[in-house]
Structure formats: structure tokens, C-alpha cells
Amino acid sequence: MRARLAAVLLAALMLFGCGPRYHYEVRRDLSVYFSNADEVIEDIRNALRSRWKSVTVTYSSHGNNMADIEAIAAELMDHALAETDRPDEGDYLRQQYGGYEIKYGYTEDNGEYAYELTIIPEYYSTVGQEEKVDEAVREITADIGGSEYERIRAVCDHLKDNVSYDKAAAKSGSNRLKATAYAALIQHRAVCQGYAVAAYRLLRECGIDARIVTGTVTREDGSEEYHAWNLVGLDGKYYELDVTWDDRSGSDEYFLRCAADIPDHRKDDRFMSAEFTAKYPPSEESYDAGKGMVW
Image 1: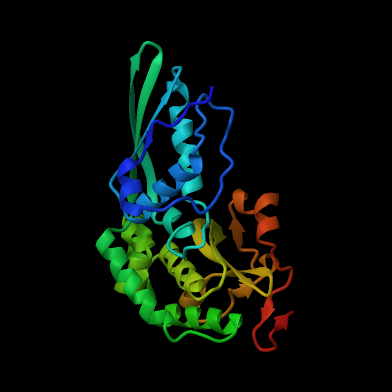
Image 2 (image 1 turned 90 degrees about the vertical axis):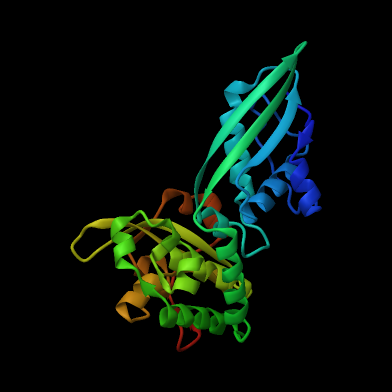
């Protein structure tokens, strides 16, 4: 059943005053299909970037679709967190929030249903903290230039010189602020996710394509733990980049490597899918920084 939107994020539309930048193919197997899904997704994304406490979508339909409302919310949020042309969206948003709750309800009048779906995100950082990050990013990237390799090198060197790994936060696992760019760039102490988010933001601000990937790493004692690092685009190929482990070891062992050369890093399945690897083709060889070529 197709549902025509009655009112979607009216406050957001008035505040942001912009139309959709992208087209998204939304699921058509649900009981509701938004004919203007692109506008809805764009406004949800803008609200997330602005750290709104809640986002409300209202719509109407000719039937009861309460059974699909959780799937509708998941579909909208997944698209809102997709990669875009902005360094402060995509993975930057996805990796600095802890999911969301939803509230919903409807009224019915002669077979016409009016729905209200409220999405309540859990952010790791505040608006004020993000403003400080924005300022720091501008200052850090102001003097970064040169080739792709030189820009990547400059970002990694800055993080290694100015951020320390927060062992206490990593051990507790409860300080989510330490998984943010704010922790890395302002507090100068972060866990792996904070390093990866900061690297992603800085690299993309410098015109370097990057993603944040998650998975597990094998430590020297054979145990495994959750980890986050980056994929970085260079000369049309994508290389593994783990600033956290290089910072802790004082080396470049995880700088622009191919996956085969760092078998202790295993990405989650979604980063190994044919769809993902087709979009981000992995290099089969590590990058030789000295010769400017793979080896």
C-alpha cells in the first residue's frame, strides 16, 4: 500500500530550507512507501548533524501499517547515515551515535490513518563539542596540502603527535565521548574509534576519500577485541590505515597497507561484501611511501 506524505519534518524544512542532494531507492515491500522519501531522508540527516534531540515524521495512509513502523524507521535512518559529499555526515555521524529509540502512534477517522513517528537518537557528542571540533578541523587542515600521499601523511602525523590512547576509557568501555573526534582533537585522548573518526573527518576535509571500518583485531596474547580503523583512497585504490596501532607502537606498520599484510585485522562482514568492495576496491599490495608505488 502506498501512503502519500501529509506532513514531513515541517520544522526541519523551515529551518534548513534545502532540498534533497541524493536519490535513494527505498523499500517497496512495506505497507508504506514515501513518494518524497528523498526529502524526508535529507531532513533527518540535517537534524542528526545538528544534534536534534528528536526527529518527527508524520504521514497518512488508507490502512493500518503499525506492523511495519520499526522497519520504516530503520530504512529512513540507514539512508540518512549513508555517505555524502560532506565530511561531517556519513560515517562521521554513524560512528558517533549509539542508535535510537522510537515512539509512535496514530489516529483513525473513517479508514484514514494519521501516523506520527518520532526518532530519538543517542549522540556521543553535543552541539557545543562539535562546534569546537569544527574550529579545530579548520585550523589543522589550513596548512595541509600537496599530493594525496602528502595529505594522508600529514593527517596521520598530526594525530600521532597530538593524540594519546586512553587505556582507562578503553578498559571501562563506558565513556562514549572517548570514541569521538572531540576526544581526539580537543581532549587529545581517545580510544580507537575516536582516532578513526578524527582521521576520517580530517582526511575528507583534505579531499581524501576515506571510510571508517570496524571489526576485530588479534592481540599478542591471541585474544580478540573490537576495533575501528580506516580505509583510505589513494590513486584509485583503497588501503588499510590504523592510526591507533601505529601511534601506540611508534611505527608505520599499519600505514597504507593491504589487507593481506595485516592479517591481525579482520573487518566485519558488511565491509567484505561484493557491493562494498566494488565501490571501494581494495589494493592487493601495500603502498611504498618511499618510492610512491605499491610493493
